[in-house]
Length: 198
Image 1 (cartoon, rainbow, N blue to C red):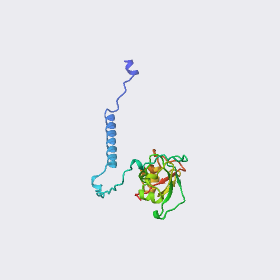
Image 2 (image 1 turned 90 degrees about the vertical axis):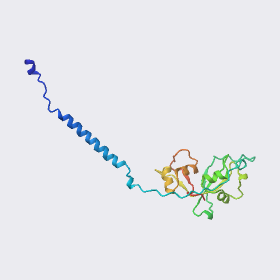
Image 3 (image 1 turned 30 degrees about the vertical axis):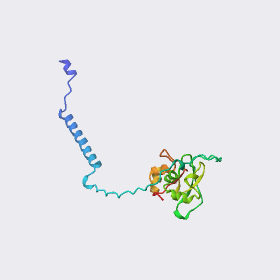
């Protein structure tokens, strides 16, 4: 008997308390899931029907022949980094607000590939460069290329922001600047190609 007096058995407060807490927690979790689901779900009644896109017109451009490709010339040409782009002062009235950039031809480039890179036509490229034809391309030769703008990368500029500022895609911006990574350094000059083929 003395043993029972010294170590009394603890009394249970209520067997229903843990069950009430469990039910309350399950209810709160269900409520949060319901509210969260409503916030992220799209209601079919609020989705507007999309207009049908207009027909896309594709222009046929000639495919470059083997003779159109830039080749090494017999004359020694000063070694210049491939496709170095610089601002020039020359202005052509035909393109209006267009800025001018200099493109140095590298091995394997064609008039079509250069024009395509800057989103201009071959005839526009030829009009800015007198006496240039598919047969007269040589590695190291400099071409004047019209571009929409030349943007100097500032603090916080990323290609997506720069492209959005000028209304062009990141892919077009990367192609015009021969970039393989979506990255731009502060102070770097980026060529901004035209939105539409000129």
